[in-house]
Amino acid sequence: METKKVGKQTIKFANPPIILETSSIVGPKEGEGPLKDTFDHIVDDMYFGEKSWERAERKFLEEAIKTVLNKKKLTSEDIDFLLAGDLLNQIISSNFAASTLGIPFLGLYGACSTMYEAIALAAVLIDGGFAHKIIAATSSHYATSERQFRYPTEQAVQKPPTAQWTVTGAGAMLLGTRDQGEGPVVTFATVGKAVDAGAKDPMNMGAAMAPAAVDTIITHLQDTGRKVEDYDLIITGDLGSVGRSIAIELANKNGYDLSNNFEDCGILIFDPSQDTHAGGSGCACSAVVTCGYLMKALREKKYKRILGIGTGALMSVTSIQQQESIPAIGHAVAIENV
Amino acid sequence: MATFTDPEKTSRLKEQMDQSRKQYEQEKYKKITQKHVPKVSILKNAVNAFWVGGLICAVAQTLFNIFSNAGFTVKEANAIVAMIMIFLGAFLTGIGVYDSIAKVGGAGAMVPVTGFANSIVAPAMEFKKEGYVFGIGAKMFSIAGPVLVYGIVTSIIVGLIAFTIM
Image (cartoon, rainbow over all chains, first blue to last red; front, side, top):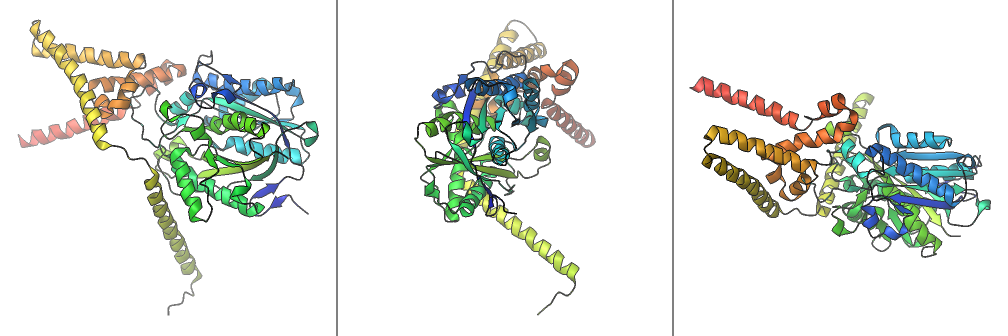
């Protein structure tokens, strides 16, 4: 039987699903950053009016999904599936948001790569004829991540320059079949391999993720026969400034020059003056930059064709305490104006 | 030339080769990453730790002088100063200032007794949401606990050594 798979790890969509609408909501720090004008809502309160940070994160996710529905004047019933995930144990934010919204739900975990994992799977379901409309969404919250993965937020600690700042917010993307409107389409998805380069420092996740990101980018280019310059922009999720420069060197060693059109959501979302060390991270980092800034740029035809790579460090608190290394993954999705 | 006819031996050898190749690759990658990590100025950190830690100690010394001039014995003044400094550490943690001091001062803010107070108050505040028993009660000493355990163990060992020598 003929399949839609090309090369080793890439899916070529026969009927590329369209991105009908997106939404992004961020917290106060992101709302002061360079991309502040590209978000739908900026919430000034880290608690979002709730009694705990975990409840706040849940609300960020719910509000992002509700916003994308409202923008298209749709209700939960119009959506076939919700594909969502987050960083908290047992993806609890997504579970609660899904139970409030009542959309048939597939929970995903790919650490900070989850948004791109969700977009890729949504495109597969739509192109396969299994769904009409799907929402892909993820969230993260600085304080919930800090207390789960690192220290209490008021703890007296000095972070190294390689550390990253978890983005507070949520992004949601509505994808559907081509006959439902105009907009950028998803043409390819390259599913990443979990790459373990032996990095062990949880305060330097850029170093853990760079090999996975580069592996996926190179595989994507080989599978599709495209070149680096065929894309107006190749953008990773949250490598940060350290991970980005490692990635450029690794790609260079393999004969690919990424020095011209290679960006990172984690670097774009904060200004160096905001004291976020190597940049932003978290599920919401790639989600809000993709659903905000990148979609705006695609709609305004600033870019014709981009390759987004969601990057995730696949660690747990237990694995770090047991001195295990940090495997990482990168999922790539090609988004184009056609 | 040696030939390996034993398949088990061959596969074990292959496994060992894969293992050492992986180790070599990881070492090589570690070297690459080290080049890209921004350098931390040890001198700058040490100077910051010195003046922040020194300032905290100067505050304590000033308090001590005030109380001993007011007629308290050394023992009494010591206890009062310790109480005030612990209160200050806890208070500054509560209003969200102490972590900013530590960002600049590093160990200069962590080592004095104010830092110890911070290490107990910070998790206590943070885990209030999980309740008084499994939240505050269980998590309060999550960072201070190891310090206490090894502090007590070390003092027992030192005490035993002193006891046998003297």
